[in-house]
Picture 1 (tube, protein in one colour):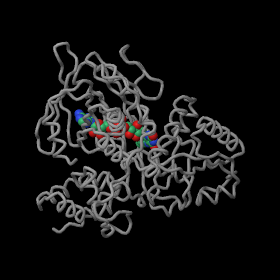
Picture 2 (cartoon, rainbow, N blue to C red; picture 1 turned 135 degrees about the vertical axis):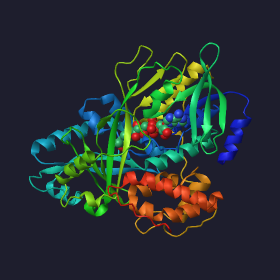
Picture 3 (cartoon, rainbow, N blue to C red; picture 1 turned 60 degrees about the vertical axis):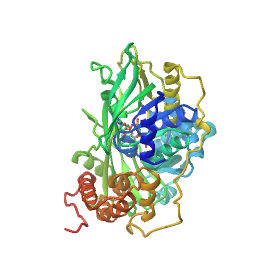
Picture 4 (cartoon, helix red, strand yellow; picture 1 turned 90 degrees about the horizontal axis):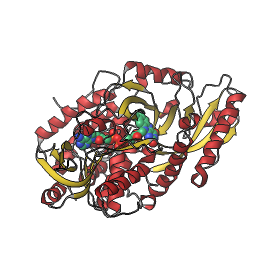
Length: 507
Ligand SMILES: Cc1cc2nc3c(=O)[nH]c(=O)nc-3n(C[C@H](O)[C@H](O)[C@H](O)COP(=O)(O)OP(=O)(O)OC[C@H]3O[C@@H](n4cnc5c(N)ncnc54)[C@H](O)[C@@H]3O)c2cc1C
């Protein structure tokens, strides 16, 4: 179904939807898949593009989280390792196993990290991706070329999962639609509507493409808006206390020559007590992340100079030669919603790193958690929504549901490469518009392809060509192309560390 057909479906619906999900990130798309695959009538609404929020800005790991293990959060790690296994089984086209090595600079570190990762193995049980092992100095150097050699005693090798977050998200949205859900990006929820008993019975949203306003009825409403969940909660209760606080994490992307390996490097203890990853990703090197408390969520968060410097400084003490500021190809930031611990008595907390709150009006808010656990989060949320709305009882089937892969183009057309430094060609643009709900230049360059995240300068260079290809597909004119280029350049500036934006546009 294309967008106008979905809008027609929404316009013509007279019955209430069983569930309306607000938020098209991992959690919301997961809820739409879960509910639609149980046979419920589902509408998913995303205010911007699918994945514009945190879900396209992660470290791209499907993991149990060795950091949580160090914190003793065993139940979270065990659950995430199980979900890692389920995701590898159900989405093998986008999730794969990745080898990691923790370099050790003393015998004690070898024993400590070796033992910790053995526990990680044990917790993964039947979902294990392979056994961890202590490796020699020589093998460490072979797997981590360029790692600091001074006092290097060896390393610990283990396995986790890796994926392309925005790609999996689009595939989840397509899976939800294949199961019968109506899914709309550029559909911003503006108010929640109540019946005479002060319980929610619907909502109003704007199609931000046309400005048209829609009011729909719903038996249950799931608020899956991540870091934005408090603004939706306050649509039903202006006095609602904040559920979440915010932490920004940034990543830097470099040429893979700085770490020419298919193995990822885990830096186990940064000066602020976190772990930092150097990961091969889509032919580049991805390094991150950080943890800075911020006072509000933003759809397009920006990295601070101090955060960039912190990542460079940490990498400098592990890699030689280390990449420098001028080598940064792209910098991107994301916001974590962290659930506050002192919530009201109406807040039943589930001990899985995520929280579900059902307020007086029956708004169900689900937040926290991680990409890796989106499926379990969705299952929990839909189970609760079924109870509130007194929908027919059913059991989630998503543990065994295949997530559909990218649409094959109608023809076998493979166009010219968009740029020698990027793994994309013209047919990726056509497919994004035809089959993957891309409406803007940014949708294609940031989330259907990852051009903006891989190399911001190159993304700006190829933008005119991509805008032309999109205009042909969408039937748009030169004015649209100019508007799209202006908007994209504004956004892309946030991903550059240099202020000199190089455009490829005819003046
Ligand atoms: C730096 C960083 C690194 C991370 N790395 C990993 C990792 O490697 N592995 C892992 O498992 N997890 C990781 N995570 C966690 C993971 O990314 C998040 O848990 C997950 O993406 C959250 O998804 P979400 O759907 O809840 O939120 P989001 O992706 O933010 O989605 C919420 C959506 O709601 C929409 N919205 C808001 N208001 C409205 C409205 N009024 N109407 C309609 N839509 C609205 C927003 O536009 C947004 O798209 C990381 C997080 C960060 C910040």
